[in-house]
Length: 333
Image (tube, rainbow, N blue to C red; front, top):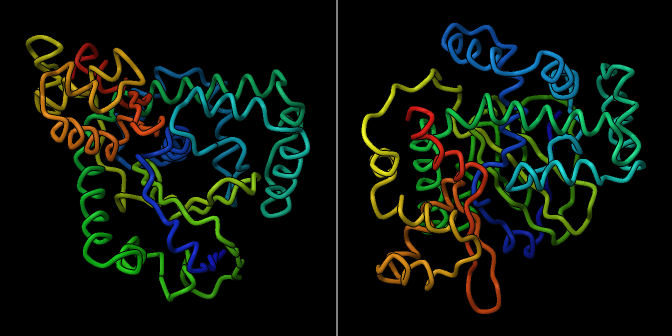
């Protein structure tokens, strides 16, 4: 289906880049990739399947690997895994029921057990949450450091477009399957049926994804106060993924080789003491505030740090993916 997003001047002013990928969306993409028999992913597939309970994986395959759309409530576009699972557990029954009904109307492939997801806080929802967490740990976390270069390159490309040409340039060169003909952004090409979505001042957040390949995905969400999202593939195909070679030396030295010494120290600092301001990070590490701000911006662009305004300052914390990178040396990176 072709989706046409209709912008107002207010929507254009509210277009923004997400801090980084949404972890649960990366899980959904990874689950779909596990069903792909490409030889390039054979080693990754073996490693993941050896570390995930087959029953958990089967539940996720039922939900996200159908030929049509997937239930939106199962893959909330949150910055953290725990936050996303909490959102899944708390979704009202009416929202989940409607979500499942729409998927069945479009593709008619959801199995009967998914009806047990309707009650809020149900055991089935807990099972799905546990499965999402398990696949994230097995399929995404160990390989994230090897994908950072591609993510950082994509962020640099988009920021350059935005700085040099504004939102027009950003949307015009986002992805081959996206066409910007102001004030309409078309997602998907060809003669498929079109579905029109009017943003009506909510804006649009652009979310990069490394495990999503093919064409971008649009999420409007059930909460009208939430900003609609366009998730786009950073790469046309997922690169070869295999267990990384071991790294000699201390964990700190391994992390420094991955990120650079100062940037590694900044990530370690905000993980050890979440909520620090930029000035506090600079003071604790004895570096300039401008330097701390620059390193935090790069880490945020790679999805390793999340920042929120607190009064007149920005408070920073490590994301789940940031925690994965910090743990990577101990796992053999």
